[in-house]
Length: 575
Ligand code: GDP
Image (cartoon, rainbow, N blue to C red):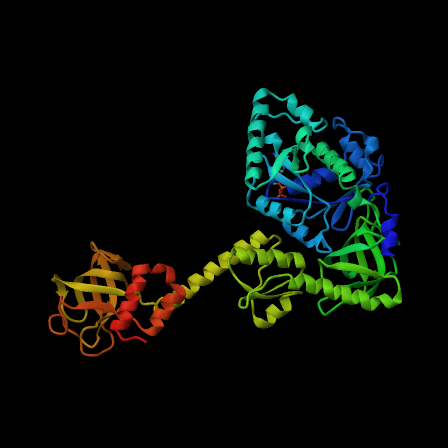
């Protein structure tokens, strides 16, 4: 069957390319999607743009309309039936959309803010695109921010840029050349998409100047993608009957139960088809009860949000209704059973697809356990852990809430990984501070000090005298002893004054006045009798205090301080 499907494929019957939008936050990804979706075709005239499940279908007519303004663009040449543009921009949805290990997206639009150049998430997006071999076009966005730029969304952007004031042209040139250099630093060649000479070289990545806000250049961007799709990538986009579908999201919808949102790349899904897909507890076999897509935006008077379909052909985004979808896993393939004896085989395929995805992840013998609801978010999490140098020992896919509730583990939630990262780091810092507060009294810092004999103000409990800190750090509260005399305990530091001002801490090299109080009730030790200025005084460390310092105050102590810990350990005979 597969051979037959492939044999029948033809570049005269293309499917819509699937397009994803990536880039740094605030570069204009959402705006870009909105602008592409907003057709300038008059209502009803040319078959409007339809919202789909997780994606928007921009039909051929709408593309043609948008591209009319583009120089050298011939409407008659548009062979793709439309674009299927994934609605959630960004990294993660791109990572989630996979088919047979590679990206499900045929192309990506990488949005770069012309005023900011390549930013952190732009670089990460580039890495991901290169890794998945996904061709992309750079939208050099926000050209309307060029000083004195005048917008004209209905013109070819290059023609229009040519008519701008000289200083606008110069600023544009300067800024885009900066971007070229930044790409070069990443080992990539980029050029403007109208640079025919460079574009003839397959190594060059095209850039199109755009203003997602005003609409300038969006026609050029769409024309470029349409042209590239049907020339360079027509083979990939030739429609075939062999099913290629990926579960994008598992969603509970009031009135419909738990449904799955599927990106259907190739082939078709029909009502009553028997389907097999991966689930938390193993492969799920079910039957399609209904296929749904949203009502076209124009027909708002229709009550229900969705319209039912008997059959849907790729490439489309579609909501599939079937029993038992509660345990379905996103980010993995969906299969249709054509012959009854295929079920076992497809179940095995499901298991293989999941275990391949999980075992291909390199793990450390020791580390955290990572569980995520989809493969894409799992990968994003692992990437994050890598940057934090947190090793992971095992991974899994599935809902984590139940397990977390059972174990009393806090779950962080965010729509984008970067917010998650911020929340987590903030929480970790709060926790660190909390532990520090809790262990403050245990964590005695190492210190070696000597009494200044001409500054002894009170010789007995409380001892008040000037001291010079010879090494380490003296913290308020620290227990003080005289190690040379079988470790006589003097008391705790009740206060530290530097130039008559109370301080919490004194460091090596300083001379301060301290008060040592003994509240143990034992006979008070006397300066001049039990110890003199010739004795070193030290903070009384214990095994426990050293462990507390190591765990919570490691960075508060310098290398020399840690050296002193070793010395005092010997002096005080601590094991
Ligand atoms: P995203 O985080 O990448 O999805 O960025 P948004 O689409 O939310 O845009 C971020 C901000 O930049 C918003 O205030 C937009 O209105 C603005 N913006 C987006 N595109 C353009 C553009 O082409 N020109 C200008 N001047 N502003 C833009």
